[in-house]
Length: 77
Image (cartoon, rainbow, N blue to C red; front, side, top):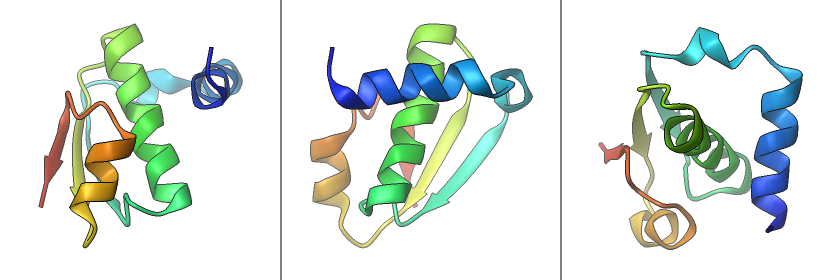
């Protein structure tokens, strides 16, 4: 299991993720360290917990985001 997936599980265990279910989230700077973690976290919620979160990303480095995330539920603005 990779370190990011372990981080996502740890974060999930320590917050109430249901408050994000069925919401739209806008993340700016998704190619940066923190923005990328947010993208991965919300993707993790969608993929493993079927949370139906619409993720919108604003980033000037779209290639970096595409390389570091799964992109199943991310819309680029």
